[in-house]
Length: 471
Image (tube, rainbow, N blue to C red; front, side, top):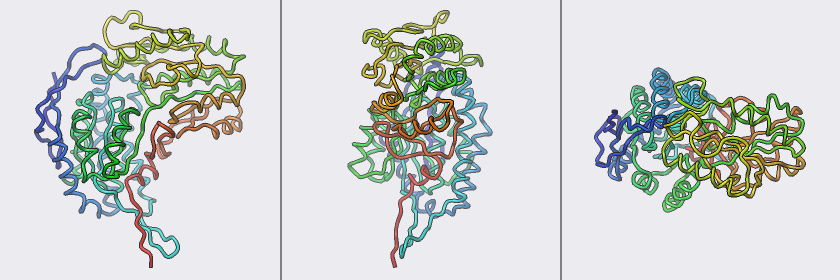
């Protein structure tokens, strides 16, 4: 049983003022594996005070000094990649297909940002004005449970590059992962107060941080509903905010797509991270004349997505993070049938042969209309909807007929056609034919998927403010 009873403030692991404890579970077994002592509003105040005290000196560090810090952070995190893997598997239940990407990425985001910083010019001339990009001040990062250390490291890398100090409030459900990555970050030897990590409830610690007058920037990844509340809180003191929120991403299969390529990619996108991913391609748009063939292929291919113990490298879909999340997904499986959709595969309950753990049967609904709730609301589980379209124009209309706009996929054998369709999709990222990840490309959403961008130059500038001196 793990007992986590420290938070990280001003360069040291310290005892929280908060007295509340929260249980930690292994979602694959439903067994309690630890407890975490939670920070409170007073701890949030201590963390902001430390970050504010550190800001004047840190904001004046040179580009070379920050690059050196980023490289030290990369080395420290990468050195314990195995421990990060073990923690995510035990506490979150992610399958190897996701962990094998997430664990190395946690360290690599620091190198990516160091490379971005190498060529970034903090001073430029525009007419008679000298424009300087200055760090925004004390930043707060609020991170979710579905890729804990990736979000912590990604947001921290941009703050360090910009010269901003940071307070991070991770999900209390990911405390073991947070503990491991905090130990890594501590080893990098940053100056006191540059980094502070306080685990606590959103309505306690998160609310105290987003309302704090000494915080100038908030970056949040999580649900759209929580994002709205953070924006309202931040508005009182006109904080700068970056919001990476929910998604209901379309995967458009055009009628000239190579189905041998597209079907595996569509399912990988839809079932990504056991479906617990804001970018998951949960709406599959198929040409009406090909619907029968595509659904047959989807059903057969989905059967190869093994569900079970995430320690098994053959497993493609792990458990939901909690009983609450499992029950939420089950409610949508019932709702889809009540709305008139037809189960192509999957459905309610645990997968066959699984008698414990918060596992969901990978599910694909057929006969889905885009006005159904299962097609419009973010389920956050391995539940996909097949929606047919008559022609290319209708496919684009359906893809864009959503409150969200985070990511989309287009599949076609004609690169020019795929690009033409991609250009009409209202989403922050559009992936053509399963193109590989580009770590320096901006990431963020349109509409209710949020605003602002992360990674690369766009992510760096989210922590900077331009100041013009005109002569």
